[in-house]
View: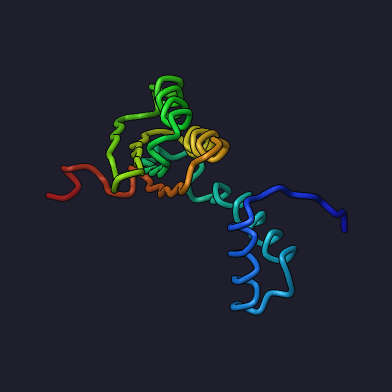
Length: 142
């Protein structure tokens, strides 16, 4: 196997080490390999390809990190055909939460989430994707 060097905050490394010990992993490399496979496979769900989807993305970041807020605004405008709605809220004294409602294809949503994940200084990113056609139309429910 190829050896790769990765930079990360000490606090994340400590969490990885604790996780490895608590869950019986042989070490950091095993966790990083599994996390990488999971991340790369996230949007490879064949059931979602070619369908219209709705996505919800939440981003948590420090209030003082204006670069993140600026990046979120830039992404919202760059993907205005995908972003159906956007909500910004303050969480506690030092955090902000950005929520995006997306309507589009798997590829479009995947690209958008990837750009958010690539944004430096985000604290947490969470998302879900639901096929819109799964719910049928109003006349189907009568």
